[in-house]
Amino acid sequence: MATPAPLENEQVQTFQKLNTTLHPRKNSTSVIDVFSSNKLAVGSVLILMLVFAFAFLGPLIYHSDQASTNLALENLPPSSRHILGTSPTGKDELGRLMVGGQSTLEVGLAVGLLSTTFGLVWGTIAGYIGGAVDALMMRIVDAMLSIPFLFFVVLLAAIVTPTVPLIIFVISAVSWLSTARLVRGETLKIKTYDYVIAAKGFGSNNRHLIKRHISPNVLGTLIVNGTLKVADAILIFASLGYLGLGVAPPATNWGTILAAGVNNIFNGYWWQLWPAAVLIILTVLSVNVLGDAVRDVFERRLARR
Image (tube, rainbow, N blue to C red):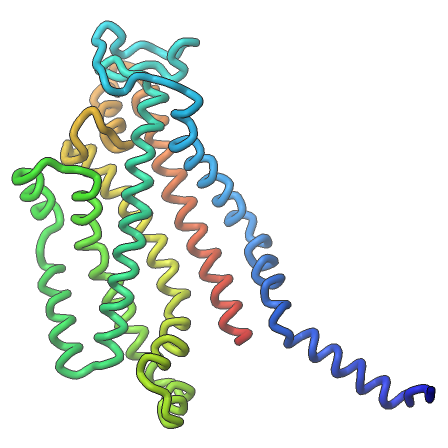
């Protein structure tokens, strides 16, 4: 067999280099590299994994009675029996933090998912269609934004007993509004780009344009906004518990635990305040850092498309 000429070898090598650079399978490695290079993001993932394990797996290992009240055990300091002491109602504080973490994380994730999804659909439709439809949809958003959130929550709390599903609905009902406005602005900008106009000129229908060109380019901004909604929902839920508008006892959340700790802050009962405060701060910061890292990954992926 004849030996390939040196020129042909150079051409083959050049083609292989180009193929290696442009081959889609390399994108997965690049995504992993981009994410793993962000040490804060990796640390945030580990912290969130520990928080979720603490809230959902912890009660399976550390058993405590969170249903009954025992005033004989109220405000006990940390000991071998009660690792983080007891609450003003005599409940084990460590077990209380675990149970409170379950409702807090559930509300945060559910609100983030619902508000982001509905805001994406609403904002994309309003921004892409435009005209009278856009004006009507955004006036609805403006009208809902004019309603004070605290007034809305207090009114509902006076009518019905707050539950986790109801609180998720209430927070989601006001959280999607800012997301819709953000997505609408991005859609108005993206639909004027040359490649969108060209795709429309070649006969692409509206569904294809939204799915292929508009939604992927909104994802980076939307993911960061979605993580902010999760963090905001956790803080709002904690603030409602602090104001006494959270879920009814014996259910609890980190905000309710924090409120009890603040009431006893001058009594030296630090175990009723700082653990809940640290958990809230760590969770919120970790979610925000993770959102920034995921945005960087999506922007790198979209840049290579």
